[in-house]
Image (cartoon, rainbow, N blue to C red; front, side):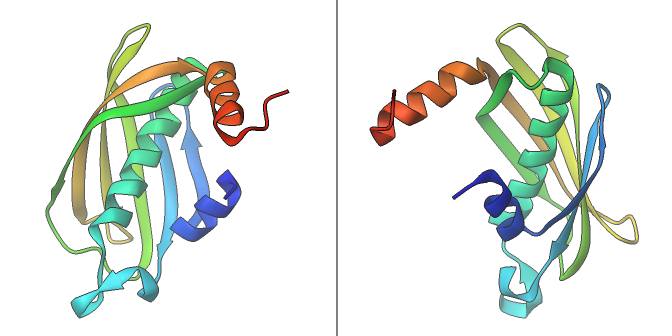
Length: 140
């Protein structure tokens, strides 16, 4: 699955902002992403915030870095429901190889739905891509 396909499956509408201060992504939560009672499944909520934090890290570190999540903690405050959803990520502390980020998810009315903290390792993109090709047997 390509990155574009993954974003489509997750419901990405657009990247509103990607700067050294923060990244904001807009998603469209769909009914098929919900479980009982029309509530978006927590994995999507987590993925949306995780993606926003990764986009913020790429904005800080550049396209040559792949932020890989080491630890992720999500607190859910209110149910996410179908409709526009906004994920935001920002840096707390940035090192050469390890970084700490926070993120939040809000609905169109600005209601805070969830917050997250993340520890990530910053890996050279060329190394990640080479390892992926080797694992798939397509190195060359």
